[in-house]
Length: 496
Image 1 (cartoon, rainbow, N blue to C red):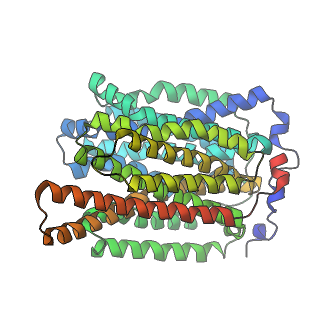
Image 2: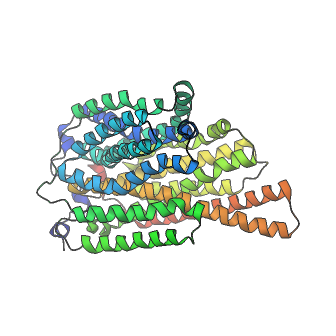
């Protein structure tokens, strides 16, 4: 039994006796918010600008598609599998120290990526870049919670959500422009001035908060959870290509699940665990994270299937399809700070649940699309999904961060980021499997009925897409329930 767990504060103790924010002016808190927004912006921006440059990178190195995919995979896997470690390190050694280290590592990794002479070194340097990005992602919400009064927390986290949406919206456009005009290395070199200025600014404005160095770092737990997440994420990423019955896929998944069980067993029996499992006794924390996982699973089914619908079925160009997808992050960008501000004054579970209900409605609208659907109907559905995401994410994140004590905010922040990354991978894997399986089934059934050629392709694709989005809508409805049953955030926190 962990002695820390036994004395873990209840939600209304999440605010320190003398909050750090009590000693900060409003102007200083805005400066800190800008510093966190810059770091939060860089991670998703780099991910989205690289996606658009993959064909050029592949041609430049004369390599296969399977190899160049690891430019993306190495980045995502490293972030997802190490982010819990960063959270614990932040709680032990200070959130600012880990955040600044991430800024420096990310900037150095960007320089090395732009100079990479081989595809192998580019993949390696992308992993280094991911180490820095993961540190910033893990520490951002924790620092915001440290320096922001509870009555303003939702609003501040909403602004951070805007930075992510702006990055996802501008990334493909910026990446395409830089790649076309200056070559693919420029998508990495553009990070250098931002990284240098951002790290210097963060070092100046973010206050130092002492960690709990009296506690030891759980190396065995960190290694175990890293191996567990890697063993789960790699097969999930490849299951669509190789099939879920592939023995390597099944073996890796079984290994990952076994390591997760071992991790829980280990964490319950050491004095200073990697993850304080007593956090999950708090229903708001547990259900909030589960809701976040389901939300990203539903959202990423849209990201996987919609480009194929627009380009293969509707015959749009890649640039036209890209423009059609912008309404979702744009709507999230507009709504997130508003929902965050509202969540500082009302029960967050109702706002989060309403957001997921709106998302479910948007997914249902997508399930009704066909080859002759008007562009306006597509845009409306995507806007509604963006509105739902913006309404859900900020109140949910604020509630999760508001229910943990100060010395656990790093691990809580990183766990939330882990749910996001795993939800993204699961969303792509499950929606890909559902779409492919349904498409294969409909091809057999419709062929037996005498359909062939273009008509067969259209009906089979449409049916598979509609089925996939209906499952996505059902997932969103499940998140409505998990958001409602988590219980209210203590009113003392919201009032600060």
